[in-house]
Image (cartoon, rainbow, N blue to C red; front, side, top):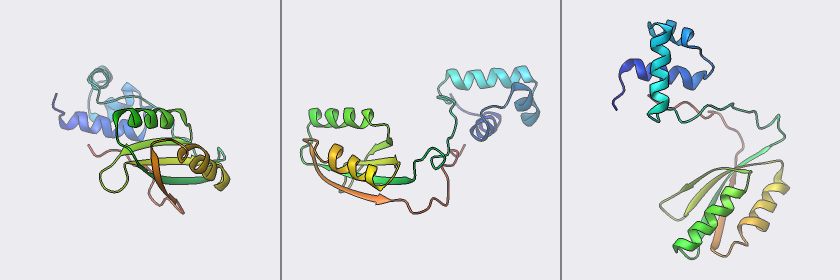
Amino acid sequence: MKLDETDKKLLSALQNNAHLTAQELGEMLNLSPSQAGRRRQRLEADGFIQSYAAKLDPMRLGLTVQGFVQVQLGTHGPDQAKSFARLVAARPEIISAWTLTGDADYMLRVYCADLGALNTLIHEILLPHAAVSRIQSQIVMDQFKRDAPLPT
């Protein structure tokens, strides 16, 4: 399915405020509320809109350390990859994970309560995994650009 300009504007508006009503979307897009609502439903059904979520403030939740952890595996078989993926999925402090090209096999984005919690995650949970050979971490000093909406 190809997106037209109205679809793109609708997606952009919803990325900034998922609470917009069909009435509000219609006013923004010069559509009737029913037309705006149908477009939204179509974009949901076609998978352009995957879900709706609240953005929480990590500092107010006591998550004072944000970091990125690069993981290099020593062995690269499918069993090791699946086992590592299960470990990552089970850890709530790991909020995102990517496979990479280059020296690291994985990049993990983590939020921890403090440096001690990050140390525990690295030294007691990730490094002991049988497939892991090396970890390099970076601690975020400041995030000057927040996670932005996707370009439409």
